[in-house]
Length: 535
Image (cartoon, rainbow, N blue to C red; front, side, top):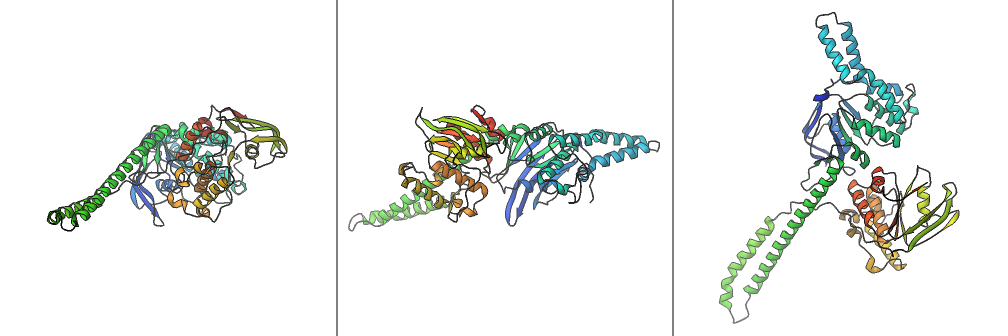
């Protein structure tokens, strides 16, 4: 394996991309991407699955050539790609050596310059080599890697074979190497994968203090909120070009909201103008018909002389309608939850000392009234999902009792996929609820009204929907039942950040009681005022 050594640029390091365009399999993936990253910049890259985030990182790293556009890079580069850069029989030490190749090269150059001090020009060469080594903290690189290995709970034994490590362990070793190598530029693809809370804290701190530039692809809203200085959004826009928002994650949320409002307003105005022109054309055609055929014996010549003017009016309005283009595409869907209410002051759900053998061994009690909020916390395996299933009536407790009103559970996993189309599954559930008397026909909502699935997805078989789209259908089915108690188990799984923000806002305002189990750090922050039930 050959390693290309790039000189450290530090304050001069930069990454610039202009008008990047790339299609894969005939499908546009990158459409006019522009970005600039300098030392101290930490650029977050967001977008739905399939929007080209990983592809963009590969283009920026030079691993993939775009169809059009340019990439200019100055400084050393560290990339958290999808594949480990060592053979399967390598060790942890081999991986560290690969990631620290630049550091090793700088140290060798310094050693060589030290030995050549007496030669002509030796002093200048030594000074340059010393500056290069000091600029990346070369002598401290291995210690920094060791610190990150420990903080990320990764294997510290450098003789350990990589083949014997889990995917998560290998990922943490590589991430520790990147954090310790002192690269000018870091390209990181979902770096929070496989990290526990301690690892997340360490990653956050290291990225915030990284002296170079960072491009960070992530769906972790807490990491984006804590780290990035700007966000590049690859999701569709009104002109089909990506948007960059300054001001960190908060600036992104505000900028995207304003962009959405402008988009919706422009689309609405164009639709209204198109409808007005169509109505004018219809009225002109009606006048032509009524003016062209007078009643027998009355006004024949008068009406005949009006005919050419009416024809011209029709032609003019046809031309106006044809010339009016709807060049603003339909804006993205906006989540529109139905109103969920419950009688104030009435106990909606009561669970007394419930246990589930092997899953929820310590008795737990829950009392919920209208508008109550509760966050169930605890590590994996502590029984959070089991408790929610007991409260929903889907799992019988081994001890204790549960009494309650109409509950709805959003489980972590979608049910077995159906051969039915999405709207058929939804309508069948509405019909079942109405027949059972659990839902009044007047309270039923249509799947399209909820703003969760685009029209083309409504008519696709559920088995052909993406994981995220199936999750959206699960949420639609939950809300269609108009529950008085919402039980949400990791509700942000597989959902876009935009929908998560809209869902969080809806939960804060609903009249139903809400019980939430999540590891999503940003959602926990957004609900920090809610009571906690630790398991």
